[in-house]
Image (cartoon, rainbow, N blue to C red; front, top):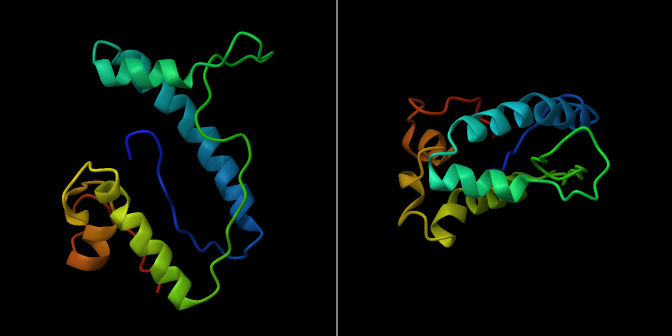
Length: 127
């Protein structure tokens, strides 16, 4: 998605999920902000950077925020729920009318799972 992403992970042990997400946000947020700042001549980058700007009432060292402050994991215990979540993630760009079919979204795991194409996004099969 242009302003967010979904991830379906299975880190061992389950308690590692929160630590994983903290580390992911800590490492990715500054890079996302830097890329947007370097590319402000592009209207979408400028607009997204403006949306990430924190209000002046926030007392912090930061001027922008990427992602939610908290992470609340949603546990997926069954193969049925796993497939339901994966299908929902794959169809999110279609529902948002960004593409006509899930395989057209270049950053989707749909190409990996349904087309066996790992050229843009390689990962481990979850199921």
